[in-house]
Length: 463
Image (tube, rainbow, N blue to C red; front, side, top):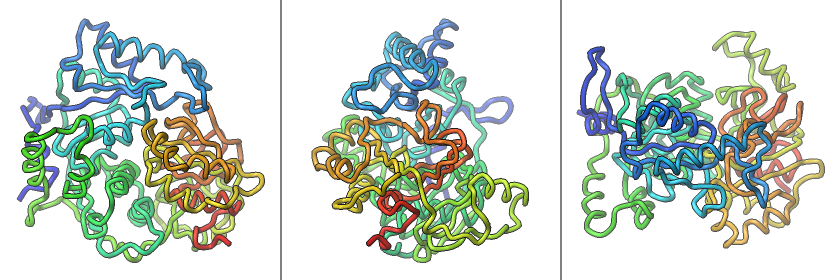
């Protein structure tokens, strides 16, 4: 009666510690320039080497500038050292580096799937909480710290306590205009930001099976906002078709053997989970956050909800004060100062295509700063081949190089204090996009429509 997670765990469990933890074999390790140098330099200082450099990768994504013509300079104080030291340490260790200017540079969780580095049945770790994105391909992927990254590089293993399991069923057909981002926000709003606390979450149901691959990545990406250990979706024909021919995917007879094995990576019909949640996908509407947690989200056409009794009243009041809102105030129509399309949640080609379709022939409202940052250099090239860069530029958006950019303030670039921004990112914490910036998270479609309207707006409400 094993679940998908049980099967992945069993495939990689290679021992037990005296304390009862499991030693898990790690197939892939990804680093980035914000923390990569710390792990690699510590490893070298201890006289250890990377066990298998072919299984380790570095992406320059977190603090790199995304302005055209960029180099090693960055707006983050001391950021250049992070970049150069990570580059030097990775090269010394023999690790593949997707560097600034490299055709495969981009956000870890975009680059890894598009190259087929992550595959069904593998374990993959990275020092980034959104590593769970890659569970969308039927992998066991989770975020770790720098010390754990060092251990995984040196030994090819990590020590873990087996987490409990949770299956989230999304049944029914999504309404037109409703996206995987809305599914994630609806789940978190209904069950809280700790609703999946420490669980290995499997997303299942007819609405999940109907999602394209990139939509599945968006859903799994937000598992960490649900406090989950990881998120995952069983691989199927959609997964296999998406992966076939990618650079690191098997080829020829090995591909056929791999697919035959991957077909078994699904929860058994009688699999037992520690918890189960059911969501009516047909009832979900386009969502937007109103507070300072993804759990503080509501359907776009609804007012700011009253205090629900969940959590502390002081936290509710603090969120409203920070966001400059009041209970009962309409979310639709709130004037915005900025709009951002990007991040490991919503910066893939399909995200940009849907947003471009909304802004085509329109223009960003006066006073709104609007930015598009593709998730990888490959996404940027593909978008430009389709003319999407011209669509965005003609509409008044800035068109950037790939990277994390203003998903968070660590890169040094920010929106202004007190400015209200609508963003396709995954977090709306206080000062996430700059000191004092007020962030509303939503789908790329809602971000695009709001940029044109100058206020929070559903695409269907544009003139």
